Amino acid sequence: MANHRSTGFPACVFSRGTGFPACVSFLTAFALCLIPAPLGADLKPALAEPNLEKRSKLALDNAAAVYQESRAAYQKGDNDRVVSAIAEVLESVDLAYKSLTDTGKNPRKSPKWFKRAEIETRDLLRKLESFEQEMSFSERPMLEKLKARVQEVHDDLLLGLMEGRKK
Image (cartoon, rainbow, N blue to C red; front, side, top):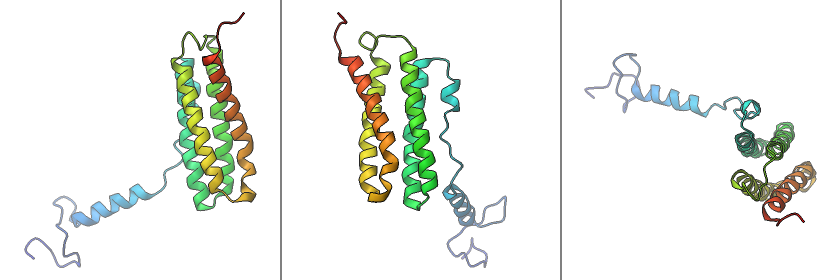
């Protein structure tokens, strides 16, 4: 053991600057990465975005991130966090839809952002369905309002994209 001091870390090489074994420094850094960070999903960047189309994308991205957090909270048994996350997903979807309707654009003539929102709401609906199936029967009602609103937004976006000329 030429490179190793007698520390009980037989496979570690000491770093030059700190005097600690390099594997301990790596393990400490790795452990710090595992600590849950404060919730990164936030609607503030979306609300600050002046471009309404980009605002809708940011809001739907936030909805997807918060959905993932709600699943993780459910796995941990934190139902209070699940309820607040569901409310934030609902708020995000509403902001995205309102932003797109506030543009005043015809989805048929400018479909880019409307189609993107339609696809993302469809994917969110699928995820919510699988999340609902994963939940216990007594906890499923907390998703009903969210699923209904996301379905309504999805249907309105799809109808706007698919409808023909107004007579």
